[in-house]
Length: 147
Image (tube, rainbow, N blue to C red; front, side, top):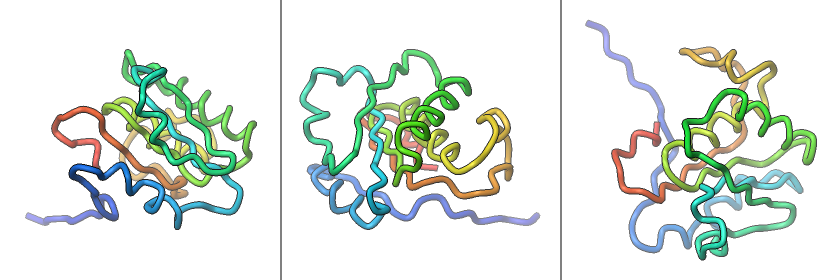
């Protein structure tokens, strides 16, 4: 039997006050004027959490409706809109539950890869690394999205 190891994420930050480190974590990932895009679960619209997001320059918060699992059409529309508005982004940060983080991961890959997100459903189909991505869970759960 052959075993394989694979790299998942650079590191995981956890514990009380972790969100306070976000600006410091994102700083080395910023690429000139290209903004960070924060996809925040629409549940937090009008609540205190978005005020804690460290916006810089052209950074943008987008409240995402994740009542249902993200669809490829939603990913493609988001990536297209970001490309039209900004050209390029430094990263896509998902803040919320698993669906919000999945949407951020998929949109981050589509920022650098052509076609539709449907073209990348499967193993080893992504040829160009996406932009920087981070997931910030707001729910307790399995943590499966870390992968």
